[in-house]
Length: 237
Image (tube, rainbow, N blue to C red; front, side):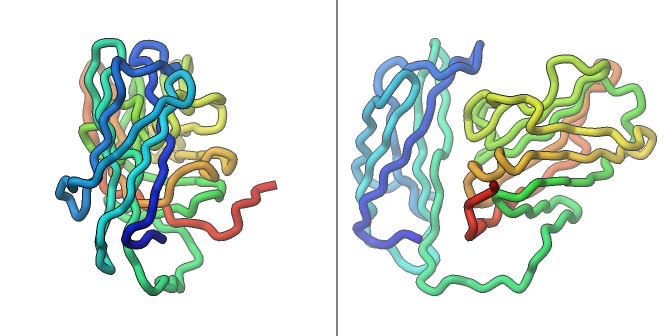
């Protein structure tokens, strides 16, 4: 939870669009505070901590209950310009109490709790003969794939697939995320993510889609909102 006049620091990483490795930006990335969808004049200071690793610091302005605050970063890496939201939070003076104890998957809306093992079953229509499947969640639809909150790929035949990106960086272990096709004729798939990955993901509301490459044609048979709810117990072992 945040409040007016609070000092906030956020770490973020810039990566090579070719290798996915942490890489310094050309010049210092520029941070912008966004309140309720409007750019705010608060000064954001960005400093370099290590190769491709930066810290953004800002003092929040006067805020009201219900305000949504985001930190957007713009950077140029290897000649490619990019921008994305690296942090989001809202003002809520009284914590809400949820009576739901289960995750949910409905048409166009997926909810999962951070720090848990995820198994997401979707039916996306026939994908018989598919070449590749992607499951992607992002802060913003215009973010590049390397900035994904999470991206998983399945190739047929299987090669170089699994977990690709987590929290805007290349995944360190591709086996921690997978897509399994249980019935190609109906498009029944299962997306699995290990708890050691979800434990490090941010709570918030994101966009997701499932993309299919089949016979040279790319389609997006499923898309919507992907919500990660915050857990209280952070231990997973």
